[in-house]
Length: 343
Image 1 (cartoon, one colour):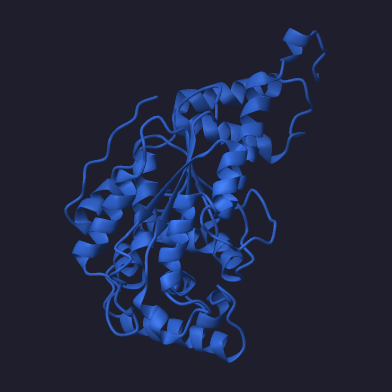
Image 2 (image 1 turned 135 degrees about the vertical axis):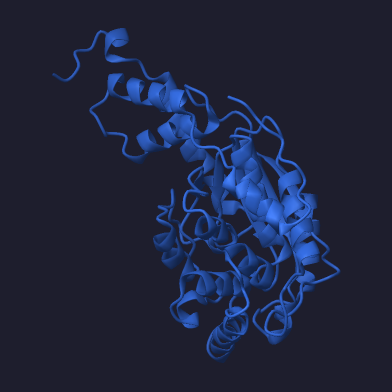
């Protein structure tokens, strides 16, 4: 296993070049996992997805047997100009207040990280400077998008063996819906959900904002990375950057809910295998998430009707990864246990 420190990018073209240079899975670790699994003292397939998860861990970490000893969660926070369109039940200042809550240890993700031994880091991205309202202009110019991508890449620490990604940002479910709608088509209403709790006329307004934004940018967007710049937010771009940095360092990733998955989706549209090192921690109750998971071919590890964000579902899924690694690495083989195997 080797880890490569990604260079800081100077342009979106630099980021595109990194995407073209992504490493694949470690063949030797994958072969070792495939050879060991049938020898373990259980009927083939009896641990279901845990068997596939352990093989995925080995291949993308480049280590067999796989371990989950140094998991980390990185939460990125940003503010959105589109919040001025009345798309959220909460004001933009809640983003700043929640970052303070993270730092004080009072949020749900703090408790989950303590429960599962996950290192938590929070990066606030220019909260005093919201992105532009993307119904009128691109959310970010190239310099702002590059800075956010670099912030995400910089947040990935060497030695991490699983990276959980999450976000905080009032208005960012609108950004997620706009990204998904722009990348995968359909109707804006199909991608737009309640977020912080909007309903009725407010939800209809939110869907209309998404439709207007996508229509306003669809002719000028050059590719999926440019869509991220135009319709994303700083925290979404940071998630994309962290996802790529993790791949370059052979660190498997657990994506959180709708916003986090939408932030990574442009990578998969730009390069079809760009998210192969990622699992999705849970299926969000935000309705667009299941539709997005179908488009990406991703199957969530958990389904608990959560929609909090802040990496909560991703951190909770660390328990599943640990279970998969423990069973694969710790179980006796038929030969070791003196148990007769299947003929």
